[in-house]
Amino acid sequence: MAELVPNKHRGTVQACLDLAILPWTLLGALIGGGIVTGGGTVGWRIVFIMGVALNLLALGMAYFWYHPVSYGPSMEIPLSNA
Image (tube, rainbow, N blue to C red; front, side, top):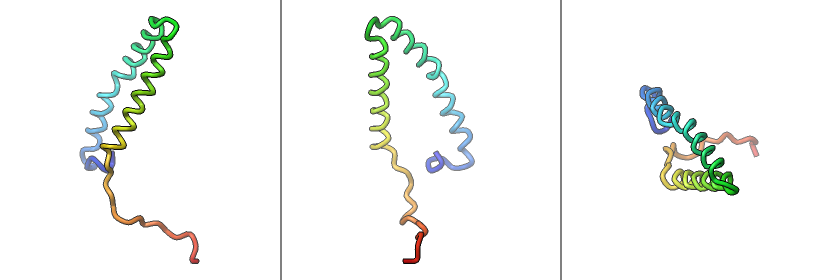
């Protein structure tokens, strides 16, 4: 988030993101528990497959749509004088 938001707005943006994510920590556990208990013999497998699919979707979205700011050539310090 440091590259995307100016310093003076960073606290507000972080608070908004936290408030958007907060309900899903509770709802995810409740919905997952409901699927597991009501899913019969394949209940936990469905939750696992859904988790894998959502994580792959998130990774794909980050790969294609997250483009951090580039600061030019790397400023690496050489470890030897050779």
